[in-house]
Amino acid sequence: MDQKKVNEEIFKKASKTYYNSSRFFPPDKREEVFTLYAFVRVADDFVDKVPADPAGFYQFKEEWKKASQGLPTNNPVVEGMANLAKKRGFEPQWTEAFLRSMEWDLSKKEYNNLQETLDYIYGSAEVIGLYMAKILELPVAAFEGARLLGRAMQYINFIRDMDEDRRVLGRRYLPLEDTGLTEISLEEAQRKPASFQKFIDIHTERYLQWQRGAESSYHYLPPSFRWPIMTASDMYVWTVETIQKNPFIVFQRQVKPSKFRVMWTFLLNRLNLGRVRVSKSTSIR
Figure (cartoon, rainbow, N blue to C red):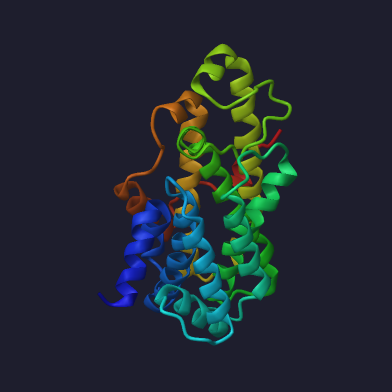
C-alpha cells in the first residue's frame, strides 16, 4: 500500500474526531497532517497496547534519532516525519519532549498535581499544536494558541477516557487534589457523588478555560484552515458538555461525536452558522 494511504489509515484508526475534521484541510496540508499523526500514533501505540511494548518503543526512538540525523532506517513512518520536520522547521526539542512523555507512559501511573499533568501534556499534546502551527505556516504570534488548543484537547481526552485509562492501562492523568476523592472508579463516585461532581467541575472548567484561550488565536487562521480546526474543537466542546450533563456517562461509554455530527458542524462553521465560541459564551469560575 502507498505510504500516504498507510499514514491516513493509521490516523483514521486512532483518532475519529480529529481525522474526520482534518479531511477538510487542503490536500497538501492534509497529507502533512497525516504524516505527523502517523508518527505520533505509532509511538503512542507502543506504550498504550496491553501489555506495553517497551522494546518496540525504544527501537522506534532509536530509529527517530537516526532519521533526524539524515541516516537511513527501515521505518517509512519515522523517515516521513524526519522529512516533514526538516521541511517545516520543527524544533528538535519538540520531538524530544513528545518522546519523553510517551516514555513516561511505560512507568508513571499517577499524576498527583496539576503541574505533573501539564509537564506530561506539553510533550504529548502541546507540541502537536506547535507542529500544526508550523505545518499551516502560521505566524509565531499564533503559537501560544496552538499550544493551548493541544492542551485543551488532551485534557478532555483525559476526562472522557478516565475510566478506561484506569481499568485497562492502570493510569490516572487527572489529579485528585482538592476533590475529596481517593481514586477514579464508579464505586468511589457512587460513594461520594458530591466529590465526584466537584472533580468533574474542576477539570471540565479547566478545559474550557484553556479552550477559550486557544480560540482567541483563531483569527490567525486562514478560513481553509480555520474551519477544520474549529470543527475539531467544537466536537471536543460537545464532548465536555455531554459529560457535564451526566458525569457518570464516563463509566458507561466513551463519548465521541458521530461522523454525521462532525460533517454537519463543519458545514455550519463554513457558513458561519456554528456555535458561539467558548471565548464569548463561557464563564469560568
